[in-house]
Image (cartoon, rainbow, N blue to C red; front, side, top):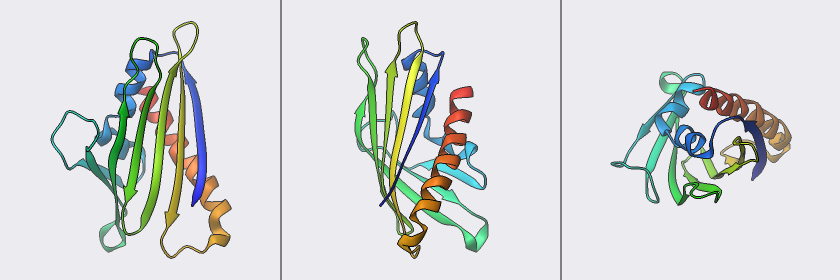
Length: 145
């Protein structure tokens, strides 16, 4: 597994940050050559399944995910969402944590651990750095709205 962490602090309330980060179709718009489809009826919660398709034509792959933990931020309590990645090319998990900060802002922690099929372990460091860049940009875009 290739673990990486992306963190951001934003001047938005945690409920709004949660709404933006759990808008699954919006994720695809933040990653080049990617689109995201929700596979289950809403609203989102445990059991929601969606897939990100990345690439062009035959050089594409699906990254299917399922929400296995869903705890929106309520009454000052942090929000936590855990996704399990169940694809053939990418497997692993993601944990999205949203915590209010003093003064009305919010702290986001996005942790992922991935296994990429057919990629030797000697590339783990490079993949972790690439993951931080790609997911950092996606997170920035989602938080900008």
